[in-house]
Length: 90
Image 1: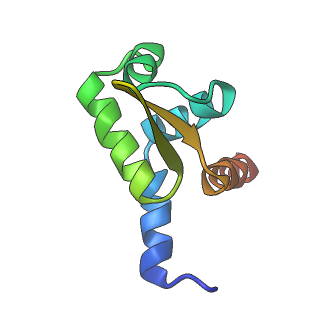
Image 2: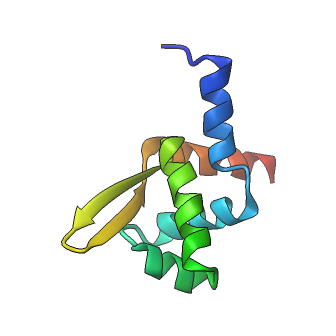
């Protein structure tokens, strides 16, 4: 099914930040990271990482999975496709 322009905009906004691109690359290399893992790996504030992950999840780029008190994150097929798209622009 073809996406509307609005839906495409939401997806693009999901990776329209250098930090979000860094998070995509990090999760490709190391899936199943927690927010603490992400914030420490990229040396960014926990709340900043949380905001980015929320936008990425809304765009369908990242999946969240609860594991006890932790929430683990990994890329979706769309997240992997976004990374491939970005590499073509490089």
